[in-house]
Length: 336
Image (cartoon, rainbow, N blue to C red; front, side, top):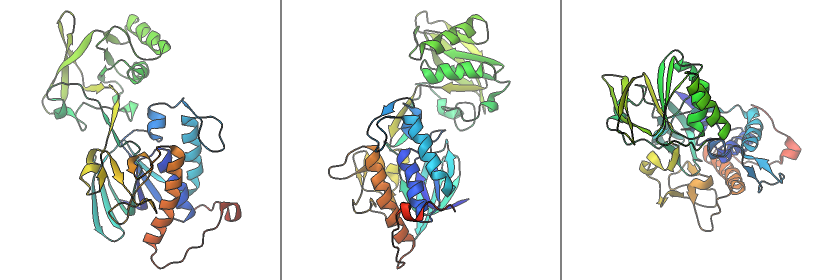
């Protein structure tokens, strides 16, 4: 059981800045994100994209902004649970929330802040019957969290974008056998990565199957093999493997948040703009995932929301305690 003052669902830029704002008020944060790394959309989708509307930065790369926000938050010693999705939110009393992830991790907090950007990024899954049977540690995964887990084992990767190419290159030195399956003859990734993959295939270090799709997955308790079909010739191949990693990108969805009893406006959470609280006392929503009149989906607006949320959360956690705000130029940043 992880104990914290504030559980933040989402480790994107707004969630990271909330650590800093909460830390100034001596509240400790733990962040949970379904993505395997810190940074949300900025790190997953466009880490090298320049951003022009962050105050004080005429231009800053998305990943550089994430790195700076993390460095800014470090004095307050945040915790992170990555590669896991919050499945349930249970309010057990005042300042008493229990969050449970899809992997069974439990986080106990006094306040919950939803900073999930556009929502929970869920993998785009191939239309293959019985795929779910081998999910959750039985051979089919949609993200690679620990490459060492696959050392000396057989793997099939499906996809034609940067993630599929980059992981194929890296894991060609880790797996005993690696097959890359792509439904087309051309790739969507960087030309340099494409050339490296083609060279690995020529050298026999990976098996490359183009114009091909996953037709079926097979096994008893765990994945044992996959069948591949060529979309042009309809020829089938049977490949023994211990792991299948479909890398077809991610799509944003509210996911389990829809079932938490929050007031929703389409795919966003309605909030009170005084402090960005939701209809559930002790639960807040900041960043792109919330909805209110004249809402602007800008990172800098999320930063503003994080600041107001933190002061409201402090009052919620410390009823009747008077707090006098002091500027950081006066008090500095005091570590825990």
